[in-house]
Image (tube, rainbow, N blue to C red; front, side, top):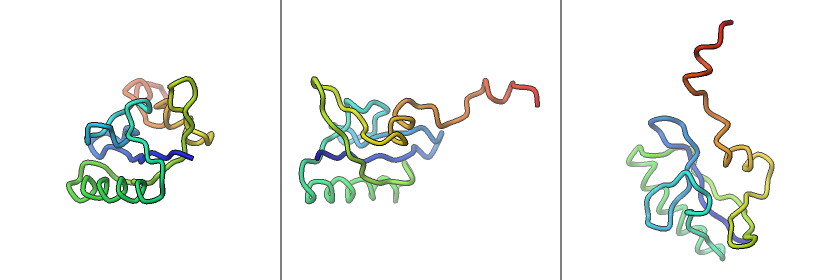
Length: 97
């Protein structure tokens, strides 16, 4: 089962994925896929450099599936994270308590 590496961007907490170009992307379809355990470990090692550079935090691999050329998160948790509904926006701060 393919995996990608996910994290949260340190400056704003947004969910990101290690990208094909070596950077970080907010889009699942732009994430770099690992097909083997060794490839996953290599992605994690690359991501660890971004943690050390204070670009991202909370790095971990997640399982995905490819359907019709699109990447889909398998777990409900990761589907929610991929929808970018896990961080507060300015609109939330404007809600009266």
